[in-house]
Length: 247
Ligand code: CA
Image (cartoon, rainbow, N blue to C red; front, side, top):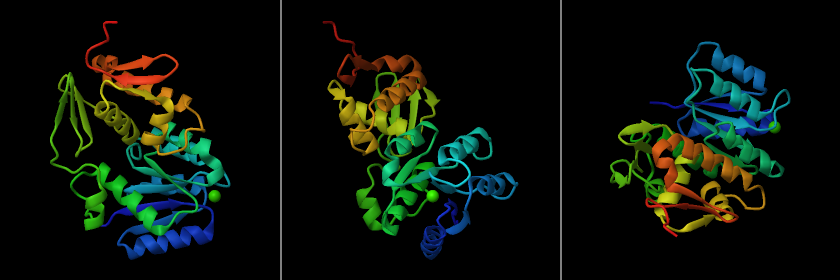
């Protein structure tokens, strides 16, 4: 099946280059040069794109606003969104996750990098469907069919990116899933906000650690009864632990 990708980008040269590269890789790419035109396109009733590449700086409205509006509509609520940002947008690209983006690429990026991100996001959205090249299979961190982990009240399927609390499925964003996975892999060890930022977000810690707190809070809320596994270590960071410390 051909994946449809909508490119929302006002730099005409860049949009054309991306559309060309994606087309050559077998994707069906379309473009919109303003937020309004993009929203018109996806809300017009035609086929919903399989993935949206969203420039953060658009002439008529911010990419985060476009993202919010896409997430507010049931048709487009779960369409994967990859934010495209300039280097000076470091804070914004963090904010991008807060409005529900699935991933981001930073300008300037290579088409190879863009394609890797797109395939990874599509694979997460549809586990087991998107074809992977041998090199991608080698670099992928989790594959469908990988063992399901039992962690206290939690059940985690790393391949399918699914989580259950007391047998009930909890829907996490890609970022929340990565955050939980990082916590579980490092059970019992304190994780500083700086480390979480660089390991989970993949960005320099100099931006803002408040973002970590926002996401940890949301993850805790979603995990309900299992949320207490994530302890706050005052002034330092967090620790995932099944049994609370008796000290
Ligand atoms: Ca732009």
